[in-house]
Length: 313
Image 1 (cartoon, rainbow, N blue to C red):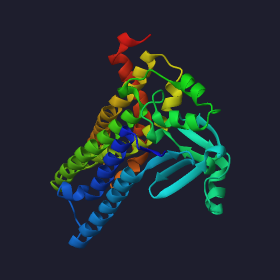
Image 2: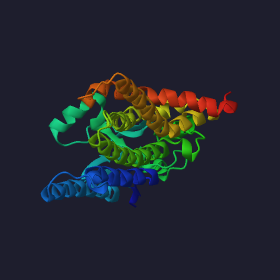
Image 3: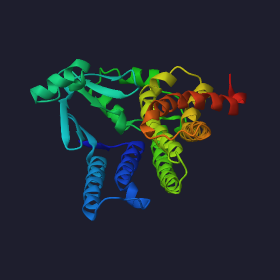
Image 4: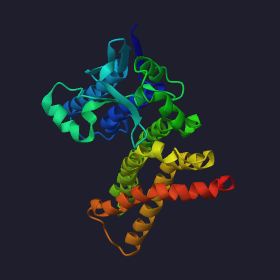
């Protein structure tokens, strides 16, 4: 009997928000009324935005895992990977905390693709995490354990079952970070438009602050995404109070990044004004924005500890 497992709820939300977000980024100049191009440029932007949104929507609807007595099949964005149960080697959790099913042989028929993915064993891997809401109660893992009775799944679940609350899970944090980025990016774009009006009115370096804010807000999620890759593995051996501290740090980070960008931008602008320096190229301050994005998470952690100092154990 076949069983079909769609994407877990949090992964569906992530894809939907990503779809709306990336599409909105193309249309942001139109949304804030600052589109300098022709009508044809807008049409192309709408086509690109629609294509991105359609691709994400297609992935959300069609991605699934199917189990049957014959084997397991993973379908994602139109790509199907299949393995018979006798070819399943193990189910494990990688260093980043993601659950994978590992096959004994390559899952790709194309030799070039298989060769490119072989160094990290990705040619033999099916990711299960996007289809699992909770490791301990996952019907998918129980289904796999039924068809592969000698698997390591019971031990895997027993060793890695954590008591994390919904707000502490990496998927929830990622969704919050993505939603915050979209909202703050819109606010930063509006702020930049207003700064351009001030510049046109004769206020020197008026767009400098908005450049630093916007750039740090764009780079911040990139650095956060890298650290979130190892979040599950990092919290696996921590007490509940420490997990809460780490989770709250990520929730504070978008606001901290915005305030840091505004504060540092205002200081640089004031220095330039006091010395009558006119900045010709805002891009000269790109290293400042990279540094802000890189340290914002550490600053958020320090602020979180101050706010929730009574929770420190």
